[in-house]
Image 1 (cartoon, helix red, strand yellow):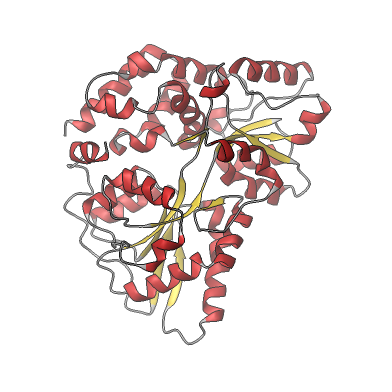
Image 2: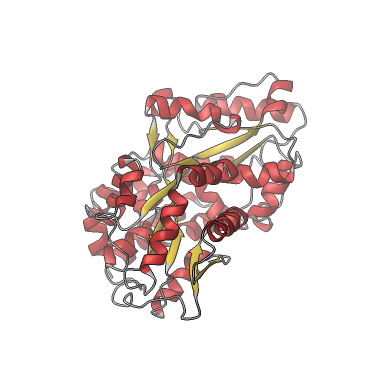
Length: 405
């Protein structure tokens, strides 16, 4: 499927401009990464790397900026590719890998340290058999919940959509707030959208949409309608609130549940070490067997194929993949690891283990949409105006526009 998608988006800004090299000649090697939550964790690992290697003649310098994906794409158009990158395993990675910009890891021993299933996942994004990155951390798209408040209200984790609505109703009956939304950051609405779309639209949607065998208008009305229901379960200024404020509000008890991925748990527990957090998969339907956990590669480590500092970059990635360091990362970020033998046993995510044990997992639908759609902005605009028919029409028009370029 990716081959077709790559062909369809071949005229995006990535093509034809990706032969340059970032970095510098002053002994500093840039590590560009896109996760605001992980800045301190990577700083600690970089410090440890240099402590263990005091004689190195170069310095790894982390670079994280707001709207990192947009910033990265802008730099690529200027022939300015960072030496080392830690980015999501999504369409941006797929475009980069497909364009030939990144190092080919197929002959490196590094790739043998990670689980094959995640290597297959990033290869599928790029539509090729050779990995251009090393999967590092994996994630889970979840509903975070306050375990103590669930216990006080005798609530259990819902397994169907109707059970989920009952939980919301019970919370409201106790004069508590079900959710605190953060749609001021458009991407945060995609957590719910992906959970609903993955389990309602089916795994073959993107492939069938590309073949023009279906449309958003045909397959997504239920997704859109449930997005509106979820929007209305919060009473804060949802479009005036950003991700960081949402994490802080949930940590402070501003809501009983919070639709976010497991990647937010570290920041939440840092804000309030006493909060008792759990996580479950949003039940999108009333068929228990149809409700799966959305999971994907949260961080792919990769380097520029034309970097002048490739040897040093590979040395740093090898350090990050060491079992002790990979464990440190997932413990700090409450993530799951793609590194063989590195396990997540934190109680905050213990409720998700059943999905990994049963294999009831699916990937993020939007990772297979043409990245030029800017799907997160379309979803945000829809949540503001609430017009389902118009939203579905816009999705189909934007898909056709991007894939026809």
